[in-house]
Amino acid sequence: MTNANARSAANSLRAQLVESNPPDLAQEFIAQLDAYYAHPSSSFYIGKLERRFYKQKVRHLAWKPYPEDGLVTFGASGTDMCDRQIFFKNSETKPEKSADEPFRGRQRRQGTAIIDFVQLDLIHMPARLGESAEFTIAEDWSTYEDDDGEEYRVKEWVFEDAAQQRKVFERNGVQFAITAKPDGILDYKGQKLIFEYKTKATGLVAMNGKLDFKGADSSHLRQVTAESLIFGINEGIILYESTEKPSWFSDEENKSVPKTRKTWADGSPKPDLRAFHFKITEKMQEDLLNDLAEQARLVYEETLPKMTIEMTGKCAFCAFKGHCKSQLTAEEKTMLIEAEQRYATSNLAGKYDHKNLREYLSGLDLEEASEDE
Image 1 (tube, rainbow, N blue to C red):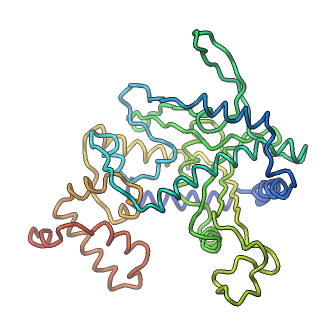
Image 2 (cartoon, one colour):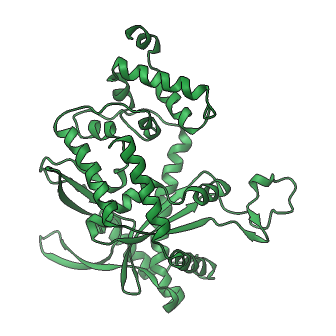
């Protein structure tokens, strides 16, 4: 995916999010969540529902490899990876395993744990709210074998492993597959909606500021675009939750709390939940398929994609950074060094893109690049 195409795709996704979304659907969803969490029994789960939920989880505790068809397979949540990461991931390159900052491990664990409870809460909402719970997790029948090889059917909630599907596509003469397991498929007044949930650990004020400015993250929009191709559902909701909560009581008059850290305003707590209703168009699907086809083509042809400055913004969760750096050409090193120097003398010095580039350059033999020019 070229840089221009990536920017165009991201802008297109944001435009569709703004232009095509009725503002009330996301608000209705938040209103339902707020009604549930304000309910006096929301902290207590119903045994029958909770047992069924965890039995379903246990049924899916198994290794489920992709079919051995030789196709590059993109996970829906990984469709925003850079071209080089996709290349290394689908080659015989071994991921790099190294120790991480301890708090990051706790943060990942926190996000993984919370989604279980969000799903369990959605399951309980009809029991607590009655007919006013208009957003519910869809259910469908699944078939399994018992220990004696006898088949049996059981009704399951459609989320994560119970929802997972893989589909093969062909675009521009290139075959590849996409696999997806959304956080849920919702029923809303007879309509199916894709549901994705994301935690934000940056803090309450930072989360609201970023979402107010940029809206839903472009990588999350690419994810739900991929899911729309798998499930044939073109609408849905992305829910963001801050792991920082407002002060238990108003902190507006608390002089020990800086203005930029206050979690209440105008007598009310600042939102810790934000929902975005999206609608996927054919153009969004076409753009994504074209991008993935090009990435798959490079893998099949064993052609390492050229390094770009924009790629350094996607290194945080990449397990191939060392391999990536070791295969830079002298020309690519020079291009990155010159870009860093331009950043350093511009009004972007020290900001997000500059920091990402500097982090990528750390550990590189920059003198060697100068000598090779």
